[in-house]
Length: 211
Length: 211
DNA sequence: TGGAAAAGTTTCCTAAAAGAAACTTTTTGT
DNA sequence: ACAAAAAGTTTCTTTTAGGAAACTTTTCCA
Image (cartoon, rainbow over all chains, first blue to last red; front, side, top):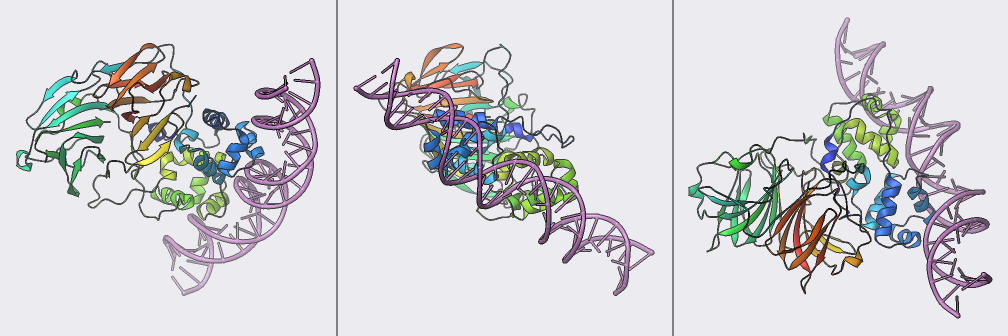
């Protein structure tokens, strides 16, 4: 039971600045449980995990049983040895959402909701769901020249961009333009001016996710 | 120029304050240095930080000067007390951007950070940036049978999935399995158990974004 | 400037983590 | 069902973290 693509877990949750009285409960975190899950998910014994991490078998056992609070050094060894990513160790596993069950929205190729603009041909994905943290859309970059823009595109949030086909020139306010080809990706702050232009014969296709 | 992809104005209310602390620093994961940067960026003295975190002034000093390796418990106090975002502690502060403007991170095809697991072959994208709202990664689904999972994958957050090549069976806890082929996409709550299995001859490739 | 107060460091002690090995439980093969 | 082996836990010892207070450095203001 791969607990999950281990490295990711709720990063965003950690912006919460709980600046109340420090003393307060600091560590309901079930670190040990998590570690055990991860180790078992890789079908490792304590012995094997020990070799991988460089931590004594007994130490691992104690960590998993929450008998000790590992040092930062130990946590790092765990992380490196087991290929864990930190956020997941620190974040509280959220109690499963009330019976509501999860949401899911499938969008078949080409079945998104069209949203044309002068410069881009957007296809909104997963439009059945509302209140999403992310907004995914697939875009055909019709523009082939920078002149077609009057100004930077600039808005709140962060954007992830993945080139599906063709090639584009990725213009950003504070960096030199850079050409991206199929398979390349970019992540950037949207407050920074940005714009895309197709450099391939055919209009380039990109996948965009905004949050 | 459109101020922004107009269609996403509404949905985008949340911004976590991505606290920007000073930049600087070298490669090696220097926890102490980071902590000091963060503390100073908030204009806190050791005494104040001590009150906020519940850690002794001396302990903080030693942590900052890398004289000790704090325990997990201590790190948690730090995190809570100073409102630190975890990845911030373990990742390098972002490169100062040219004009103090936005951040940007380009990942060339195949140049992501590999992260193998028994069932998936992940390639983390945009790893240069920390404190991201989204975590993008490209994954090769090595699993070809459901049997290889012991249990559902389940975690916090929401996930967007786009099939780049091949085909997969997308299993979810509350829905019937559904086959997705290149170009199809899905958006779902991660608390709901989920798992992927390649159904094409070749391992399928998917793009994943988690938030 | 001098000197007091604030900020930061070091020392010293105790409490706790890490490792080695003994011990217990679980699994496996016949 | 019974060893034997493997996996996991506990004990014991050594090492190291954490906190109180002494000590040093920096700041700031008469």
